[in-house]
Length: 111
Image (cartoon, rainbow, N blue to C red; front, side):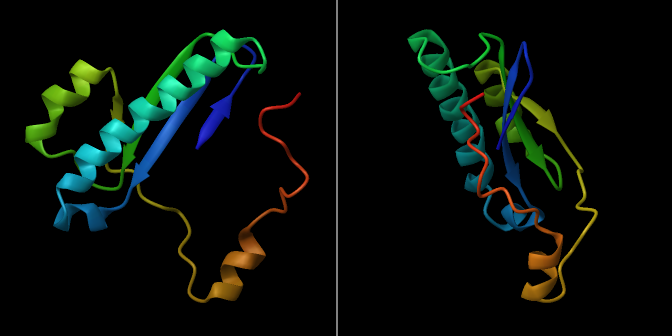
């Protein structure tokens, strides 16, 4: 996900607690945020996109980042938000459709 304001872009990767069973998911999530940040930085430098030069990268976790990845996160400049719990869980696929806004006409990179 990417959030954009007039002066910053924030690239976000989200990992659910399912990743606790697959610790390498956390490592991939860290590198995914770096990839998002590099892409946004390149787009900002190109001048062809309305991308602010201030770019932040965040990994949002439903549980906690394992200790073995904390140094790597710091070295990569990834901000970690831990223990973030969803506020809505769909019981049926129809529930998701009711809760999902129609964004088909929105183009995230054009003002």
